[in-house]
Image (tube, rainbow, N blue to C red; front, side, top):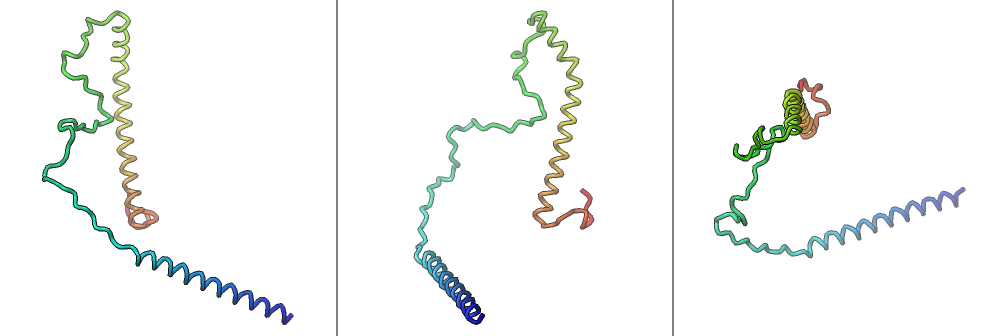
Length: 140
């Protein structure tokens, strides 16, 4: 029994000694790596005062996804008289369905805005580190 206890004590001491020695080596290497690095000087970027724009006038504006596309000037639009009978029938079907589509687009827009509000509230909640807004008396 005494031999078993002394062997166990020896093993524990060896583990602690090995761990301490390994920590010292890792710490020395990490410190040496940081100390040996010399900061490099950055080269200042030459700026003349005017922003660089390779193609002025090529900027695009973000399109609102809830709005229909613009076809351009009125002369680019096709006149109803220019269409065939099948095309006129398709136009009429589109006109009758347009009312339901407009309502659907409004509903989708409102749903997207509601989800956006909820997502912003959750993001603020996570940034503040609050588990639940209800716990602090905030009603979303």
